[in-house]
Amino acid sequence: MSTAVFLQREGYAVTVIDKVPPGEGASFGNAGGVVVSGIVPPVHAGMLLKIPGWLLDPKGPVTVHWRHLPAALPWLLAVGRNALPDRVKKITDARAQLGMRALQDHRAILAHAGASDLLEMDDGLHLYSTRRQYDDNAGWRALRAKYGYDGRELSGDEAREIEPDLTPDIYKAVFWDGWHRIVDPFEMVQKLAEQVLRDGGNIVQDEVISIDQDGTRATRLHLMNAGEQIVQNLCVCAGAWSHELARMLGSKVLLQAERGYHVIMKDPGVRLGRAVTHAAQPGAVTPHHDGIKIAGSDEIAANDAPADWRRADQMHVYGKRVLPQLRDINGTETKWMGRRPSTPDSLPVISPSPNLVNVWYGFGHGHMGLSWGPTTGRMIADMITARTSNTDPAPFLINRPM
Ligand SMILES: Cc1cc2nc3c(=O)[nH]c(=O)nc-3n(C[C@H](O)[C@H](O)[C@H](O)COP(=O)(O)OP(=O)(O)OC[C@H]3O[C@@H](n4cnc5c(N)ncnc54)[C@H](O)[C@@H]3O)c2cc1C
Image (cartoon, rainbow, N blue to C red; front, side, top):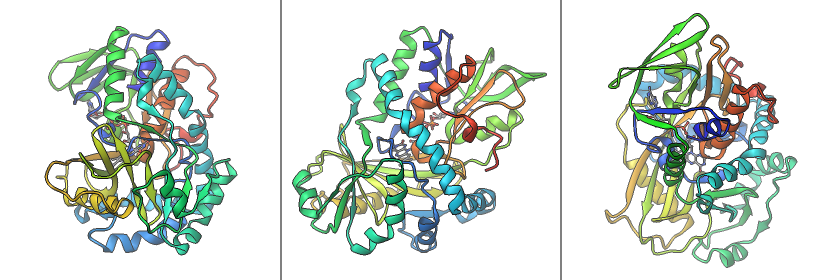
């Protein structure tokens, strides 16, 4: 939807085709973080050491559906390669480029859609329960500090002065120095969709099942229900399904759904004014329009495998670790599963097609698609209009080695 908005701003007539209504993909229930300082890739050497232990724990934050392992293996091996220190350095650099522009691009499209109030600028807090966790995380903090993200450190008491309901079990808390917040990501996509319609665009709810090509051009989409759609220019921004469409268009990409879960607790019984993460495991506890949302978990599984709602319940356990007075599960909470579209190098694909002159790609944002969505839209608009972008596109090309 961000890409649609930026293309309309360039004067293009835009049609968005999605098999579900706007915002009901991965963007529906993410943790809402516009994490401009989220520059270190989620998988790096320190994290790699923790993963085997997590995999052995059925309640751990990471799991692989063993039946899906053969299909996921090339992706998993590539993830391992990208955790080597020299790769992490290059990937961090590229992620920092996107982070640098993210806030400005969010502000531009939110203002255009009359939805600026959805962005909250309170900074997130990262908690450590023990000195060991804090020391283990030193490399992560040092890498972030190199890029200027060296959030202030607080004692437990100082952290609880700001957020009184936080756990007493805090060795140290550190500001993210750039974890801003969309209060409701679903509403954000809906607001952008409404703006796309107001600006004369079309939104078609249908599934693209095949794509015709003629020489170096994509010419026609075949839709499940509504027949055909002639193509002038085509942008593939299809989340965790994008590799299937890219394959139809002659580009092979390693993409895997890292499925995550959330639970939203209405009347949570505690107050929270900002996103809070904990060094013990990935995930975020964050204020939401409807209460408190706890989002995280990483399930390597097929796109269409049934959801495992026990993983959403584990999110509640995570929430209790951060906010011990969080009320118990009582059936009034909402649970959700979404598919992070993840490349093995934790960088999105923002790229022209190498073989078709009227095709562009914007997908593969993994854990960071809310943060980098608007910047992706701006970069694709730059590419289509052949304008030099102020973000170097090279690390995001579809045919880069992953
Ligand atoms: C638990 C969780 C927490 C997260 N927290 C954060 C966070 O705090 N900050 C952050 O930046 N990111 C976060 N993310 C990641 C973020 O949500 C995703 O990266 C982002 O939503 C991906 O957006 P997208 O538009 O690429 O994909 P989607 O939102 O999934 O949209 C892709 C759309 O393409 C459609 N589609 C696919 N194939 C076809 C087809 N053939 N025909 C028609 N339509 C098709 C799908 O229906 C879907 O609606 C989180 C993700 C999860 C799961």
